[in-house]
Length: 477
Ligand code: NAD
Image (cartoon, rainbow, N blue to C red):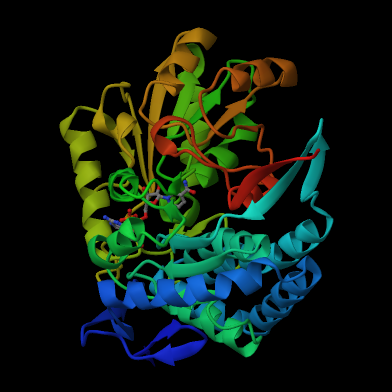
């Protein structure tokens, strides 16, 4: 049991302004594994004052010193790797191998990436008679979700701090334990007081207080479209910059020259990665009507190998194991979408809305595949955020592109083809922030973010640093 009673503000562990708290639940055992305080507006105010007073010094601290802090924190986190894995497996429910490789693994790499980047970044350039300088934007409020809780915190906090900004973090109240662990590491690394501040709480109270705060220069938000739109409304009054990383309903287009033997594993893993609780999950599989059966068979052969497991068990095959959904409420939401797919007339090939018979405890959802899905159905339009694949047929490439682009989202996508040039030309027609061709691997230094209602910003790599910068022109005589 990990019990926390304080927030981290101005370099100290301080008492919250309220006596409220929230239990953290293990998704597989349904037992309480932690407890954290829930804050209020007064806690945000206090954290913003601390971040503001640290800004002048931190923003002018030489980049090599900022980089050293990043490297020290990265090393401190690496030393607590096993703990990170244990905590995230519990609060999210991601199986151990996946947590080790993806949740924790990705979280460790970014420190060196951004340390090296700020040391070589061109902070100034001459344009005609102007000196154009890039400067940190100021105090940044970071609001993050529960699905990759530590990595998504790090995708904001590391570049923000590297850029010279100071931060107030509000992690997801459903998965806050990893954020406490990170904060302990930052404190141990001696990060100057006020550069990083942690306040836990609910979105409509603590999150909204950050979005509305007149002394917060930017809100960097990752989460649902519904909350993202509210953040933007709350931030509008103070005209602050708002970076939004939101949901998706991404299409995986299998062109008619693709090899069924080559697509099954990637299609299923790309959809059901982290139990489908992945913003960029490839949840719509678009197959040519002329070869539908071959591709459906390839998918079914792969899905049949997935096993629902205890997230803490030593199960090395991260491609064929799946844990529970992260919370009871989310499990119910996913199950209701599956029921909706059945009610709207899609054909259920495997899975379903019921609790798996052999797993009466834990927020498990069976890997589920629908076929005969039409583009207007809820399961083809709405983000389910669970292990649910919707297979849709198309007639030709134009039809595939039209269906792929036919949702409010535009976060990710994929194209499978025997012809790379043909795949690239289809990829260019997709209104989406990233496209993988024939299993092209996730690249941590390539820009990540959405078109349309999937968001308005880019994280990762150079773009992730520039998100937190202002630009000034100094006209020289
Ligand atoms: P959520 O929107 O419910 O919560 C995300 C965060 O926002 C939490 O910290 C929450 O407390 C806070 N929040 C909620 N309401 C708020 C408000 N009114 N004002 C300020 N903050 C508020 O999302 P979630 O359920 O935690 O995460 C799942 C969603 O996140 C999915 O839609 C997923 O696609 C999206 N997501 C996007 C990306 C990306 O990079 N584009 C990555 C991961 C998850």
